[in-house]
Image 1 (spheres, rainbow, N blue to C red):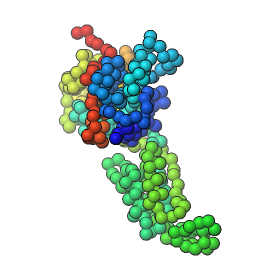
Image 2 (cartoon, one colour):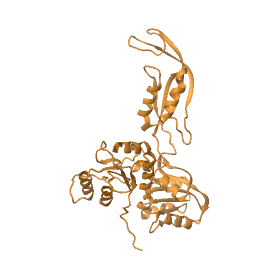
Image 3 (cartoon, helix red, strand yellow):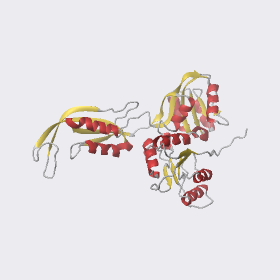
Image 4 (cartoon, rainbow, N blue to C red):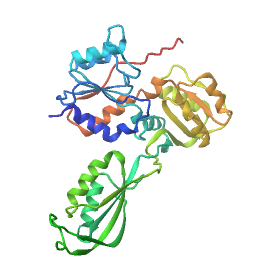
Length: 366
């Protein structure tokens, strides 16, 4: 039996909520996390049509990218479109969950999907986040060092870029004196004991700290486990906004625009003046990405692809790169498929579908 919270807990391991931007409202929107989940419908936006589709297909969890509650909501009245959707969800026993900028800030998410769709290689984050990881230091007797290390690795510690099971180990002498109520693993009460120990150091994502500490305590032989946790300001290429990558071979600017138009089925692409340069390195950001133009320029990319650029934003290209605005919906439209695949991979026998509804509110007169 799969509960709604099982699906959400899984998604939050892939795109932790603490990675969302301060202005965002990712997370639970409405519904009971404890109820049995009949199935999942994924969508970019929540609309009444999407909700009708979920009800018709008996899928009682809707996972959307854009949070339907984004501004202050003081009244639940039928004159408000968001209020109408919330009322319908409650009456229909639907659960709604939003996975927004936290999905933007993991490389496998929205921006990684865009990069894959246009064939970029060597993809990394355009604007890496800091304060996402910690360092755990613990002290283990020689006889149990291997067991504790493996337990920490299994819980998710020791991952750095494309490497796993990373740790640093130093030998030393530990001392302790067990008191009256102690139950020491080695040594005698009231006598100082010296034990050869291994100092194990591993890094860990902040969101996995509870899981990793549980693994540490379950595998460590001591009654009282000594450990330290240090904050890290390091930036990691897997976490942050936007993405940057390279084409296997340079292409023309018009060839890039045609690739974008075809891949994302956009009615029109707004772009800055041509630079007369070949396009090899491309930066991108799904949705509203004008704040990352400066990052694209610093990385000396040949083109930057995003959406929601204003008139004055195009001047920032300054002949140094090609700016391309492919549309907000267009840039993020494959997010529902991305989420569908991720959930199916974890719950292969479970009913998961992406919406068949087009939720784009923008139309083009051609």
